[in-house]
Image 1: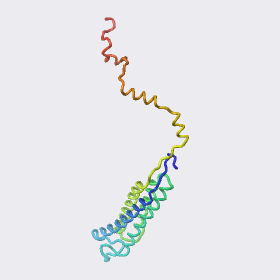
Image 2: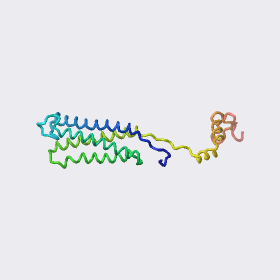
Image 3: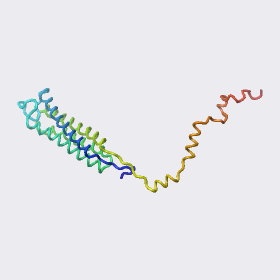
Image 4: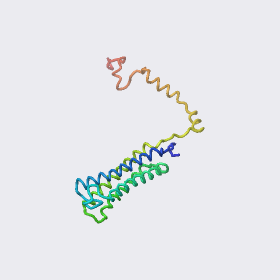
Length: 199
């Protein structure tokens, strides 16, 4: 029960089906990115240039790792949704920082600079896709259930009678004002005499 009187209920089936779809997207991003980098740009990443446009076993392991990372992120989001306030905010920070680590890590390895840059870009795009997709999935998988009215709420509501206010407000909308105008705008009143003082 939260301080706002509502309780979150997570649809686990919807969340995990979205997580599986996100894992497929993450793996495909790696495959497509590798194909573009090796086949179009001619930059050898994950395998020597002789391995072809798609690379070798390293590319398959890279794609599988991206899919597993998406599933781990789904488990983290599920845990945060059932236990933490501002779950999607914490999730965005955690996975965002993990994406930064994945983007920087290629520069710590022994490889040519173009290969490092290409790997960093693929890791960044994959991380952004995982964060954005899972936050959207999490928003659709959460339902808020309102707090039940208690006896105290019923008694508090019974003590307050707003019928007079409601009727007065309603009457004010439908009745024309009957008080004559006065003051500096009194000249607009057709019933007021237009004679000047002393006439």
